[in-house]
Length: 155
Image: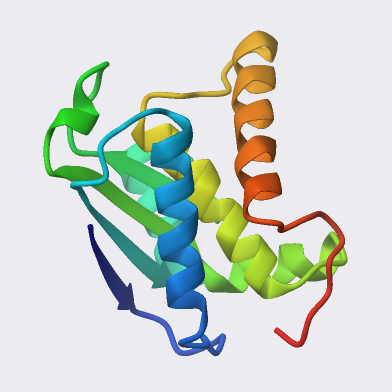
């Protein structure tokens, strides 16, 4: 298991203690899906300005977002390669959302990681049925990690 982490922003402090939690979240998603654990995932932490630019370039949406997922290969067999893909998280947006939803920044980052991992594995939420399936899978992982909504910690 190899996770590359690149903190490309300096607006929100990233606590190093979150790295094992991110690793556990990625592992939990793969285990729930019955996928092998021999993989690489890259996670980049950026600010709102950078994620807005990426969103504009790759999705034609000129606004900031919380997370973007870039699977290495589209389709059913993307997990068979060692490199699953890239996750880009705006720490500014994650902090805003943690305040809005009254939970910790740690919880928000872990949720965004889980959400994005499901995208890397081919899940989407373009219609209500797919959204429900994906949300239920996310809830299963968050519950297995014992990370619940509206939890506050010192993050």
